[in-house]
Image (tube, rainbow, N blue to C red; front, side):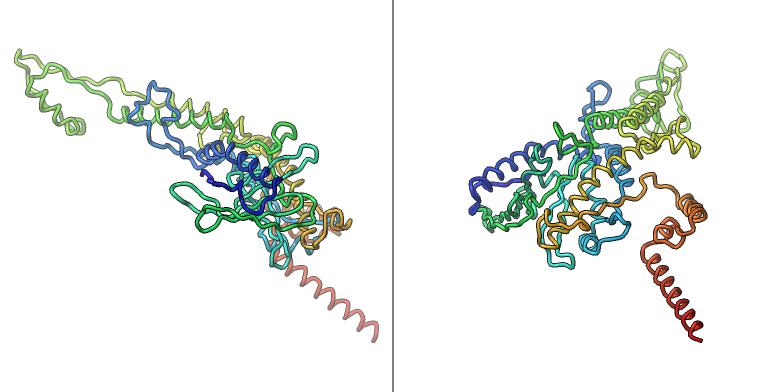
Length: 467
């Protein structure tokens, strides 16, 4: 979608420095808008055959239709599903009440899952912060690169300033932002378009964070050339996707010819020729073909050309699937193309997923650093103080991710029992019950019941000693 910001650079209330920031950020957003729309289109499978046609075998009359290909989506979702944020823990293994409220109030676990998809699609996603009227006092919102952007400060290794569309309306086929936030070191500027759509007005909301209330959570980032990461829907992925669509279109055309093989009938009269031409389909599906001798008394000759095959197209699909799996670290099975080399044993499946697991671990590490900064900023907003005023306890938090290898529940439970047999103190802990597969409400009930039983046992002992 194209965002029409109109004359936002001339918004009333903005100072010269803020006007320059808004202008640079709007230009930055527009500079990447076409590429972001392209990636979204590939992700949603809206690619026409005309974009993939070499102009040799596919006629122009059939090159306008779209042919679905889920490979770009698979390259994003398969990796995203292995990066599962599970909340924050302290270094001693406990929990932070403030961050627990932040996670629950903002639905941060589910928000992270959706944001990770946008991050992998575009390379970056932007979390923003503000004070809120909820239990934690903090609001966290993730913005896609389609509706937000930032300028990177290489010296400080953080966002220098950022812009995010908070509200928009559709007008005349384009999307017109109605509320835009500008994030600076000292304030959040809320820029609102009036009802007539002709004038913007900016309102300043100062803060004491000392840095913009916006982060950049990026994947495979490079601090020098690509601070905002790399998209999973890269050029090679798009090229292979077009190869898939082109091959499928050719296979479909070949199948049409294979379904109705070309036949010929020689030595027929003009009347028979006219009758057959006018009833081609009936002649093709009929179980019997009748013809008399021609004017010379010769018998007509009937024949059929060799039937085509789609086997070369199937082999091409397998080759493309193998290349795609190599580029994205997916298994060939994930592409949906049947291959004789597909892994069959459990060890072979684990080996095929090893590269993907490594990528998921790298993603967790990169996003973990952003989530740590997110936790610090959330605690600072909740405590109405700056980052430098956070206590050692507030600094000692860590994001927790579930195992990206996604082992089966049976193997995890077996591992928990074996650990408990070697270390009896491990049995009965929350981690032990998590590995057994119990959900959080069930674990809470188990721990509460254990506390009641321990309390009753303690009272019984006291009573026996008194007697």
